[in-house]
Image 1 (tube, rainbow, N blue to C red):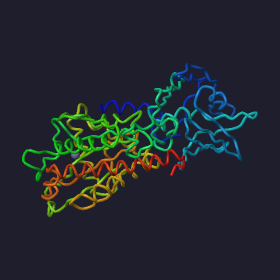
Image 2: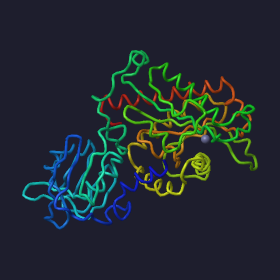
Image 3: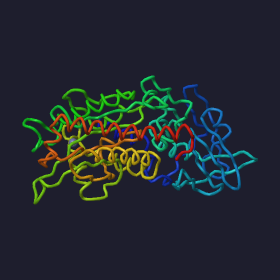
Image 4: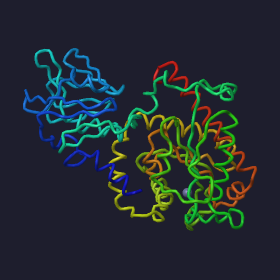
Length: 413
Ligand SMILES: [Zn+2]
């Protein structure tokens, strides 16, 4: 599965590496656009020396719209805005500047967009949703349900929202939600040995117990739940978040923290929540190393993962996906810290492999330290597990309702 991810990343990496704009693809006379509605040929123009496509022609076969105004062309593609400064080799996507070999331009009142945009930037930004084969000159819709990493939450069409079940409605929801819960570790991967957990109990047992309780809490409120595991089995890290797709709203991975022996390490306690991002502190790096360790139980090596991760992390930097993940993390952290006997260790960003393949808001909750006596006892107790599950459900519910407000009023905030 690690190989699969690496391949997927290779496929979306433009020739010459992820430094987009370094190399323009060779210009074919035409490209083939293949979608669920069939295939059609789109001629490639070279008025300005670089390969370009008529936006009007593309709009016949792809979910594309274009408006030219004041020296700018705003091209909407699958509900995402791309702003081309006419004649300049750049484009803006949200707040990012993406370099181009040659820009968009007008020729006899027809807007032409660079082939490079469609061939390199679109497959990269829409991850898995589209791909371009430079040898065949073929642009393909990878599958019907487009996965849009860059616009996860705000791009949801309110009309596409599922109406709530009676149970969900009675619990104040205005849409039907689905959550994927991921009890960390499992099978040969015990997770941390659980120094102060009850005798014979390891991290993998606590994560499963809390996961099952959280599942029950959410279902009681009318939220659909999918578990990455319901038994003591090992699931590859990169497969876990992939279970959150189509109707899934968010992904929550559950773990128990621990420290290696050093001065005073048994004093460290409390709950913390992570979302994907750069490892900013030594502490975050330590936790990432610990949780990513599970890779060594998987088939294949972790080496290929490093390059793949570099690429994914760069791409995730400023997008909506991270903002939604941060809001979810804050909501769950606030709720769980309120019931936890230990410290409120807050929200942080981190490079977790398990979150790297997520295409929806995703967090990793460290429910306490097995190396702290009080946390260990709390996490081993049914009351403790129940309290954390109930609080996490409160945090998730609060996030989902706030999210409904955004989607249904269309404010994007
Ligand atoms: Zn863990």
